[in-house]
Amino acid sequence: MYPDLFSIGPFTLHTYGLFVAIGFCVGLMITIKLGKSEGIKAQEVMDLGFLIILAAIAGSRIMYILMNIPYYVERPMDIFKIWQGGLVFSGGVICVVLTVMWYAKRHDLSFWKLADLWAPAMAIGQGIGRIGCFMAGCCYGRPTGSKWSIVFTDPHALAPLNIPLHPTQIYSAAYALIIFIILILLYSRKKFEGQVFLWLLVLHSTARLFVERFRGDDRGILLGSDMSITQAVTLLILIGSIVTLIIFKRRQARN
View 1 (cartoon, rainbow, N blue to C red):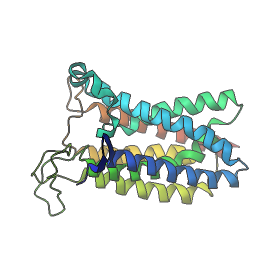
View 2 (view 1 turned 120 degrees about the horizontal axis):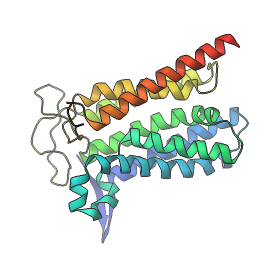
View 3 (view 1 turned 180 degrees about the vertical axis):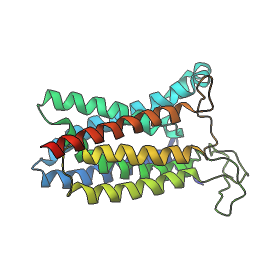
């Protein structure tokens, strides 16, 4: 793959960072278009979008660091090397939710309406970002003899070299694209605020638990179990989302 696209003097354009930026821009454009249908100005979308991208990167990075504390204790400066990969989607979701809750309360807006508005962008942004992840070789899969395996040969890749691996990054990009299409179709048909965002969490968590079975990088193991930290957090998000979705559906049915 191609972890680095090109270098000019001390500057290097990293593929991972480029695709994360592209994913955010595409998500922002989609949200601006959806916002127009809700009477939300483009400037308001961009203002919140700036906070969301900061929260997403910070939360995703913090979660990854917590999963690999021994490594970063020995190499504290690597904490800031985001261009080398190392972002956990569930950590980003948690941080984004807290940020949007704060923003909604500050501006007297509906949190669930904002969450629905940004849900498709989160899905497509992750899907595009995973392509950059694939290029960099992070979040790599377990060794496999399957016909669709991928072999990394670039010495700058973060994945083990010259070994057939599950292309888990492509799995993630594919399910994110499917989720995006589902959410866009659901958006115009939603029956209550929060429905689109909750389905994002349900669909993503379900797909993520499946893909985690094929991951080969260190995910951090909970004490006394075979479950990774990512799986545990994802499972909690899935359960919480399903319960909230059921409550909202019953409330909507009563009304």
